[in-house]
Length: 565
Image 1: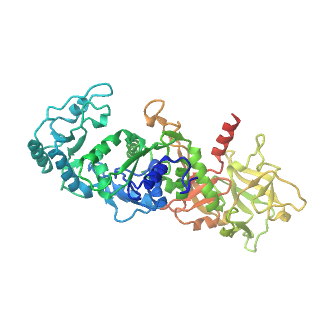
Image 2 (image 1 turned 90 degrees about the vertical axis):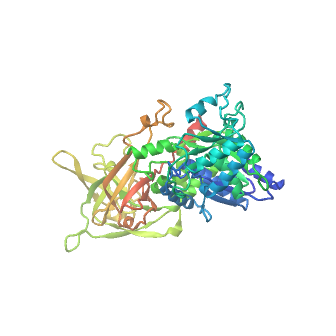
Image 3 (image 1 turned 180 degrees about the horizontal axis):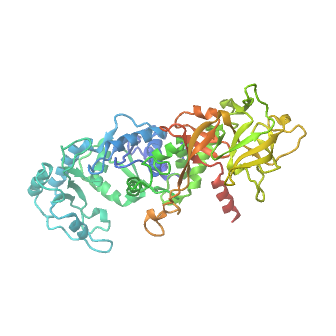
């Protein structure tokens, strides 16, 4: 670890240290997070957020949230609100005011006119398809636009008419005049402005001329005083254009520095906004915050703790090479955090009635109630204890009983003794079936001297089972999740990610039984269902729990297997 707490070998932080030592920006560190408000943030954005906001904090600088709202056709205030909520939940409340590229539309337009006046931008009347074809390709020369040598006066006049709505969509664009033979395709007279007669979520109908990302981004950085503009690797080829635009303008002080790092890819997850939108609009998932989605909203609803996501992003670090990380690694960080922070509860997902023979009853015939003291979290004594009711009528898991047990099955079966967690040792004596031969009830004797789950004669049992007192049980529903995709790299085999959808990735159990304390769980809180995993209470639906992650550390198993190999 470095002196700032950053992972060793983090080239971004090393670059900032060199800049500070050289006083490149007067010792200032200012970053920005510039999302497009055209969808919900995902796990890849979480890494960028941790980098942009985290690095600024480490170096005593500042980071601003600036929305890249330059495409009115796809943007919505719903996305703006969700992004602000996600960033705050991750632990980085954006400073106020929140900024928008649309705040700078007038300045960007003024600078565009400046480039026209300098002979470095021109209006092109060709359609987008022709412009794209004339750019050529790698090893293929570009073709100059027939409008490339228009006079400054004509370009200014046309550009001003474009602003005032004189032309239809797609009829003209403003292009930078750089080099149509440049080896970097981004430098072959890139488009700076296009005509869009569309209502903007902030500026309304004031503009019908909108800047492209490449034109708006670097200039917005300069307006805000950004020192270090951190991007993912796909913008590596855009950096020369970023620098060229800034070099042409009459800026005060040093221009921002763009630095690229590898984007975050995780097995079984997709981060394409287009694909995520397809999943939502097709009804494949239940919205952007579906717990199977890789969105921050989906992970929050599923119960992923924000510290676990931050720790995962820190562990992955900032590198120059794209790579794909196992989803089991991400889940291991979630499990590690929840193991410390989550209280334990008992719940039965597929209930089977267990009746204890000889259990004492009260005068009214109801079973006597005993109370057992159980730790809320053995990993955290500060969480204290709770009282759990126990009676002679219980719910146990169907999977914890087998009338004809398979090999190595140590749970309840005829004649076998097991331990009920923290309560008594019981032995199955009878099996009750319905008319179709299905087991509907199991009866068992119990050892009254084994209170607390320990036999006085020291005999051992091989299995401990959880349970819920039937008269006290709270009804609950549980959503169980598998991977949304069946292949670790969705779409790799056929080119279509939808071909790898698992139609059975979500199962909802509606007849679950839980100990009464579970009914007191606050919305969004994650608890551990003993022996079953971690579950988050849905923020809006009473007693609907989403399975967050299982108890088994699959990442540890993967590591052991790799070591043996």
